[in-house]
Image (cartoon, helix red, strand yellow):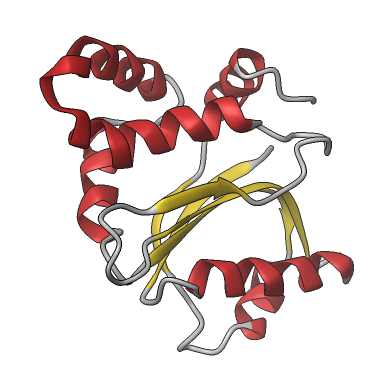
Length: 164
């Protein structure tokens, strides 16, 4: 089973640094990163920049459709206003099927602000104590969201064409 987690960092480059370290840990087979995406909001920008951070060829990858829909709903739909109200409602309803509800979206909007970043991870096997030991207290992010049920994971993979 995969785990979807979201980590918030106090700096705009914190998520990038954490993913680099996780890549090193993956080479040591301490963690299996199936997919990742990053939101970075540098100081002085009106909105965050988002990007998928992993190669989507790997097994379990969600692909740009999922990340684009999620990031669009969380970070960009509020900026578009009433024009996309119905579409936003439809997207929100669809994400609820995967355990991503309005409370989660509101929480992320409130926490990922200018000068911060977030790392969205889909992971397989993890040796938790070794991953924790690899990060200093200053490097650690705040866990915002964790885990998918088996049903939510299967639906997510099916709907977004992820390889099993």
